[in-house]
Image 1 (cartoon, rainbow, N blue to C red):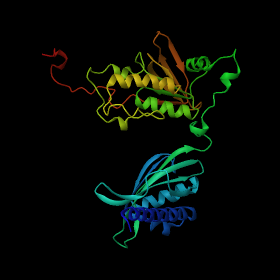
Image 2 (cartoon, rainbow, N blue to C red):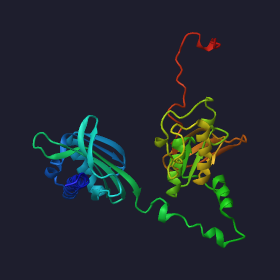
Image 3 (cartoon, helix red, strand yellow):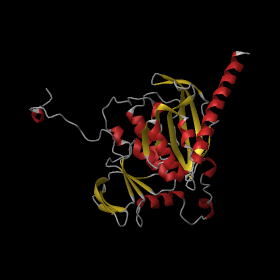
Image 4 (cartoon, one colour):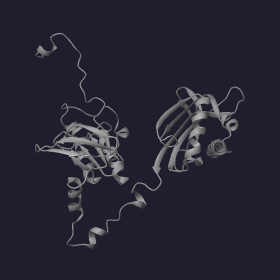
Amino acid sequence: MTAKSGILAETQSLATLANHWLATFEKALAGGDDALLKTLFHPDSHWRDVLALTWHIRTVNGVEVILRELKAQAGRAHPIGFRTDPHRTAPRHVTRAGTEAIEAIFRFETAEGRGSGVVRLIPDAADGHMKAWTLLTALDEIKGFEEQVSRSRAKGESYARYFRGPNWLDLRKSAAAYVERDPVVLVVGGGQAGLSIGARLTQLQVDTLIVDREQRIGDNWRNRYHALTLHNQMQVNHLPYMPFPPNWPTYIPKDKLAGWFEAYVESMELSYWTGTEFKGGAYNESEERWSVVLHRADGTKREIRPRHVVMATGASGIPNLPDLPMLRNFGGK
């Protein structure tokens, strides 16, 4: 056996092991078989669900609690089709948090959507069987509300048919003005988080408006200190649908990133109001809408009534200054 064939055989063996675990997991969930389900989890096990089965972001620890939650949620979500994802990294040996495990990336679907996940298997000292140490299940898309990408993308043919009607730019300007309608979602803050959620919601055809108090898109980076570059690598800062070019520096200069933000908003067709300050809002329980007051750059006040408000103002937007004696009188010398 060559080294290459040996690696291939091991990969196939790991895939067989992972798919056997996934098939047994699906069978136990479908049949409500508590005893079978318990044989699949290590005594020290952890389950993280991101909207897939619970419709919440939850972490559950301990085999007994995991079994109880899985059984309760599976009856509603009806998860099926668990199998390793052939388009992702094949099952492999890894070391996570100092623990050696077999890691497998899988896919599945529920009554509401399609998802992906990761399971890490380790041997149980009691019987030697490979059992789930950690399990992640995450919702990737909702059935009937798939993102308009790849084969589902808009064709744009309607703009070519009506020569005297509004073209793409006319419709973009009209949509972003919100003259006769309110957005479904208001996103407060136009940084990485605001742009990311705005782009994802727009692709899901959820009418979304982003507002930011800065006068120009990207000023939340552009106005920082002169020599600033990002403190973490380019690879972990990509925005949805438009990754940074492969020739960009590992640590992106602030002004380069600011310019990218402007281009991103235009390319992703995001509705974005600059120079707009969020002054507060109140939620009407009976109407299930917010009443939000915005102050625009031209001095006008606008009240809008979105169904959802997302605060994307950053982790460090509010200064945390120590209460030091004479700090207010310190002149910098």
